[in-house]
Image (cartoon, rainbow, N blue to C red):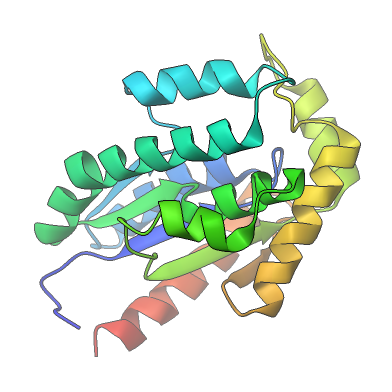
Length: 204
């Protein structure tokens, strides 16, 4: 691999898994350790991302429309933000990426191969991390969060389906799985240890 290029690291998990908090912490800690890193997230704050967030609060929206909006937002995200950073040698931590579309829209019956097809304009991440947490804890976190709108996936049955879909990808060796239970610093330490071990291997 070209060592001058940054690495794309995606952090995945069900809603309430703590992945957003961890993605931000990990980005800061990697910078402190000398690995130049930027944090980003999906849906983005761009025009497509803003539209997508409205759809996610509507339980009647079509999962196929959701998948297409996610793909459009992701392609723009990659081309305008992620790719330029990677080309400058910056590592990018993205809070959600392709796997989220496969899992979330897949839990509503959208075919795996079709989601992969509409996302084929962006590359897979170099490091793929899934933060695993039990559904009860995830629901407790969602209920205790200050939220104006509860998205359609933030319910027990939906979260369980999504968790099961993630497990199917783990069985296919898509992810490195991290235990998300415990305090915030314990989880961060596990993720940092994994990422640094991967960086050392990739950059040899």
